Image (cartoon, rainbow, N blue to C red):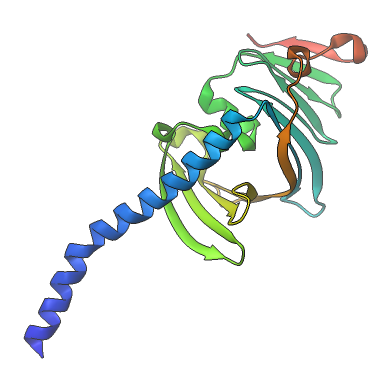
Length: 206
């Protein structure tokens, strides 16, 4: 029996790296398909619900290439691929910045869907109901984000939800209520229009 258990132990050690490799390959295959789906679309529109506090927060996002615009009751963000405008409703303030790619991961939770594979390490988790799950751990430890879990619908290939785990133990659930391909949008869609918000104070952080 001792010899038998030694054989089992050796097999477990030898096959563990292959299992981990398979999980990573499966995760990257799903993420690659999702990135291709988004890249092929003229634009992608989504409606989502953020569950992080006592009250859920609803919002919407439109993405086209590296550009996006996102709106919630608390803030609105425009990013044209270089410049970002963040309008905070409560303080009546608009911050202008030119964020690094890693900074966009914090301001736009959907940016992880198109992030390059060099940004994270990935592995496939067990399925949940009609969704496949992928875990992404950012290589940049300075983000304050420990890991993402993306749920991808088995039939459509679109994400169902994002779960963001922060280093301090907080967790944010982003439930995607609706997502799909949209028509191409004019470039001004992703640029802040000061004329529409004359009461806002501009703070240029560039």
